[in-house]
Length: 368
Ligand code: NAD
Image (cartoon, rainbow, N blue to C red; front, top):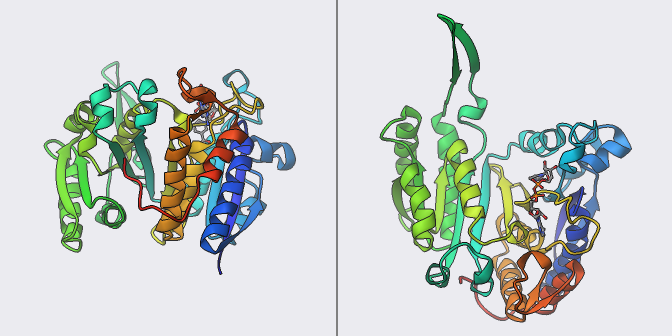
């Protein structure tokens, strides 16, 4: 029986609630497919601050180092308390520090619009029914975020400058990640840049094309970022994988996050060059609903499915989890964030249970 060690960092707000709902789903997957998981919990965010006086204690980093993957909940507190030491810099000192510690260079943000949830999607019904299942892969370690930032005065006027820099190694790494991910999906990559203006984008385009030569089974198209933003709203079903630089990815992935209608169904992953990664819901700690048992566990369960697929390479198990989510939605299970009058409104635990009961080894990959 193949065994995997998972560092479980539930964090704050709804994190512990959706995590508690997700671990039994993983255990059920293990039973069905002859896999086993060892979960080791560790503190992060405000929860760690209460215990250790810091947001990412060394002990937590060690638990992650000894594991095959990190399953992360969410961190952060209510806006009104953001000046308290417990919450100040909480996200930067936990998630960004983990990204840095483990060299997590590529961020995966899928956007799947479920036809069962068409009522909560801002898209037109016809678009939803074309099947929207895209994955945005964002480079995480380069771009304007890591360049020099200056503000100076000249002739009594303020002038600001942010430097954008990319090395070909940084681009090649994320391009390989994108083409390999495409081989596990529908084999289409759209590389997004602003090559009509920026030198970093010209290099991006050249390097992505060079790396593409090693993946002849994957189709590649280049697209300018402004057109990509338009197409994401006008014709989102045309995309399989979008690979792009840090800043463009930041903006485009938030645009795509709006398509399904709730953050409660949006998973994400951040991976390093060795395939080690951190898997977490795209949303935050949702303090407005924390402690009520009504948070949607789907984003956390789908993050676990991404872990199983991308960190462990177990596609059948991941397909079974993705399929079970679709079946539970077909059965009418809805947490409050996705309830629009149809089906039945369920709690966090009931939603996870509805998904668990629909897990099965039978059936192919789910592509809506
Ligand atoms: P948020 O994502 O926590 O919440 C935005 C909205 O989405 C809220 O209405 C919330 O109820 C809803 N929502 C989010 N997840 C949900 C779920 N699983 N089920 C149902 N509804 C869900 O964003 P925010 O309110 O701006 O931030 C709250 C805290 O989270 C802040 O402290 C912020 O810094 C932190 N944050 C953390 C992460 C992370 O841990 N990766 C990411 C973003 C924000």
